[in-house]
Structure formats: C-alpha cells, structure tokens
Amino acid sequence: MKVFHYPKCSTCVKARKWLRDRNIDFVEKNIVEETPSVEELKKVLEYSGLPIKKLFNTSGMMYREMNIKEKTDKMSDDEKLSLLSENGMLVKRPIVLGDKFALVGFKESEWQAVLGK
Image (cartoon, rainbow, N blue to C red):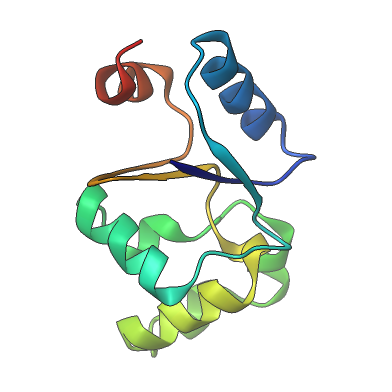
C-alpha cells in the first residue's frame, strides 16, 4: 500500500500516525518528489469512484496561483491527469493506493471502514 503525502501537511501527518498506531504497513511517497503517475491516478479514480475534480487540492496555493479552476473547464480528463502527475502540490492529499482500493484525503471514518484495524 502506497501513501502519497506532503511532509509539512498536518492532515498527512495525522493520517500517517493513524496508520502507524494501527500497525498498518505502508510505503511513504513524498507527493512532491514522487508524484503519482497518470496510471496510479487512473487507479485512484477507478478504485475510489471519485470524479477527477476531487483529485485536485483546491485549497492549495498552487491551485489558486495557477488559476487551475478556470483552466480545467477546457481540459480533457487525460490533460487533467497529466497536469496532476507533473505537479504534486496540485494533488489532494493524502492518497492511499492499495490493491483494489484507494482513499483520497483523510476522513477517519472512511479509513476505518476500508482499512478496518
């Protein structure tokens, strides 16, 4: 199971602590240094059932500075995935990518339901 996170993000810190407290094994991926690939992002969408817009970190400074909201209206899904895979600061975090499941953001009740420990 991979956990894409940003080390300075307080939500990511809480999420990783939650996993460690339950002795759940995971591989940490710094979302800036090891941005999810297009294929990984496609799996996140498939497994989570979320729309692509939920993968964007809409509260992030980079999202606002780059005026992404305006740009994505004119982009195809493939272009959006490519943009996300090129800039980890645009991606909502943390992302958990496991075998046949994915979690986006940290909602303890959702994590409990899926990871169940």
